[in-house]
Length: 169
Image (cartoon, rainbow, N blue to C red; front, side, top):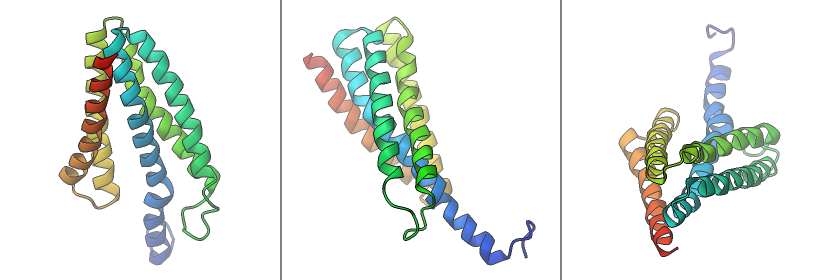
């Protein structure tokens, strides 16, 4: 018996389901929101030098992607066959993660000066990369450096595309 009064096998099963039912939808949301917002807001702020335009674009994208990802996750099956748990709970977790991932990059764009806003957004991106890598290493038995490299590569590709589009505007 465990300290909580659960048989050890039930506690182990619960520990195995937590990453699948809670952490994975949150990670999908954080990454989806972050990566979906990053390219458009970067292109808008670099192309127009008007962070407020980029803020409203980022807010609209964060909300739109948020709703789409939440419904997608919530409607992706009952969770009975896969053990992924209640679809409404998964959708809610994905919704929260997606909005957080998108808005974290968008809020710095309330700073009026475009270089300061863009710098603050880059700091937020760096913080989020470290957080995503830590979560992956903590819950999915992936080494921190490997996780960081994977997430940073995706971010670098998006930034490269964004910078290119922003300079063409």
